[in-house]
Length: 127
Image (cartoon, rainbow, N blue to C red):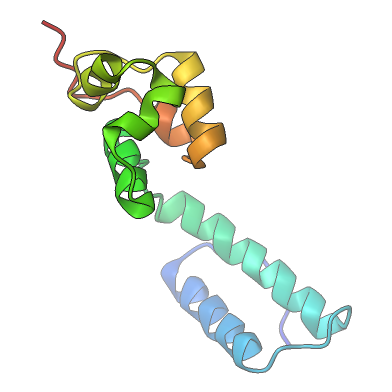
């Protein structure tokens, strides 16, 4: 086996993916040298992907709507996290920004990543 080193280009990235795919199909024994190599290889791949293939976080309102759809929630179900129904509609219609308290409750009660909720919404339409 060749020495592990940082992944610096697409050719090295493709080679790392191929080696990782082998380990996925032939899972090494936990604690073995091959298992350690697989773990380090995954870290290198993850680091390269974070630098070169970063994914933008979703818009906070879209994240809330997506979670509502996933869980079959209605606007009234957001009242414990946001406040009165009129406030819920103001948030969902981008008339009012999320507060830190709302962000915390949405994160803790619905499991929406806080990073997604903190992101500044580009489409706030305050009249």
